[in-house]
Image 1 (cartoon, one colour):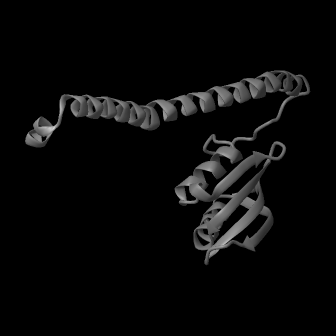
Image 2 (cartoon, rainbow, N blue to C red):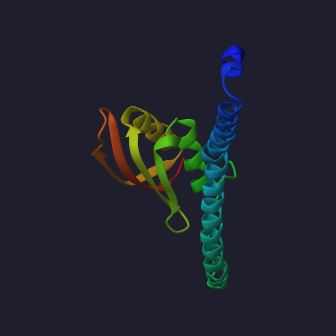
Image 3 (tube, rainbow, N blue to C red):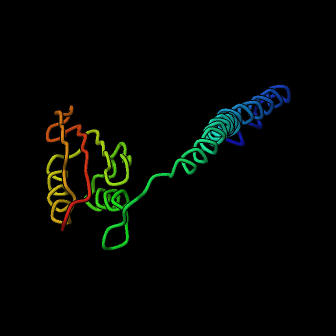
Length: 160
C-alpha cells in the first residue's frame, strides 16, 4: 500500500489526504454527532412533556387530597392490592404484555394486557384467586399470535 501511495504524485496524495479527512469527518457526523443531537432533542421534548404533566399533577393531587384522597386497603402482608397485582404479574412472566394497572377506587384494580400468553395469564389468575383476589370482570380477545390474548380484568380484594 505504501508503495502505491509513493507512486502517486504530490497533488494526488494531497487530494487523497483531503478526501480521507472529509470522509472521516462525514462518518463522525453521521454515526456520532447526528444521533447524539437527535437524542438530545428527543430528551428535551420528553422533559418538557414531563414538566407539563407534573405541572398538571401537582394541583390535581392537592385537589384529591382535599377531597379525602384515595384510600388504599393493605392486605395481610401489608401490601396494597395494586402492589400485589403488579408484583404477581411480573412474577408470572407477564410483565412484557402488561399495558396498565390502574386503581379503581379503594378496593379494586383494573389490569390490561396486550398479547399476553394465555397459559401464563390463566396460571397467574389461579394463584391470585388462591391469594384472595376476586375477579369481578374479565374479557379477552384473541391476539395476532397463537396462544396470545388481549385481556382486561377488574380485580378486588376478597376474603382469604
